[in-house]
Image (cartoon, rainbow, N blue to C red; front, side, top):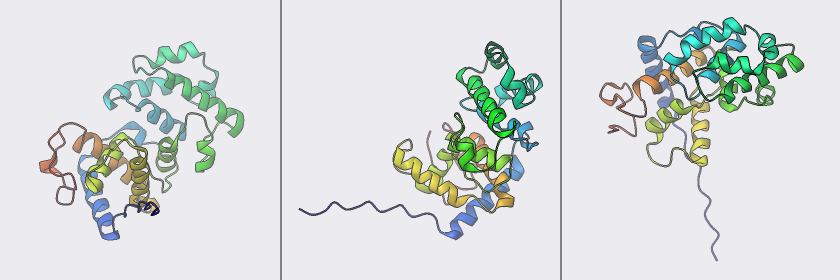
Length: 230
């Protein structure tokens, strides 16, 4: 009986394609990137709050609540000591109320084990209950300016459409492939911050799930999904 063939790993884009994508994405971001308050800080706690708030929530709903939250709980220590019922009241109306409790759990671990700070190395960040691969990458990239990949819903959709085009986006195998793609594309350390922010803005503004702006997309000549009819 013949042995089953092993599936070959999907090839990553060659260097020229990576450079072209980075160049076009960063040029788009310079013209269209959003001015958001968490992009004007390198405080890991502020970055963490923004990332948790933005999970499944629109930016315009997060903006006022982000400022209110930091005014009320300005540090990990303040958040660690807050009554849980107060957290939910402050969080309202963002929904998904497990998130403020998750933030407090992270705060308490930071205070108890790390002197009220978030560490910068990936393994220690991932040891926090409530910090997964995406959030760890975002903290490393946005707070510590490290070369770190990210993969949220917007980023996954952009990379899938531009570089892959076919297959099941939400499968485990595709997620692994997209993580590898994101890690390959992220540029050298000094450009990683802007590149990752650009990916998120591009997915939210230029290449959303519905009605992507394909006709004015800078990636259209090389996009494997162009043109989309969503």
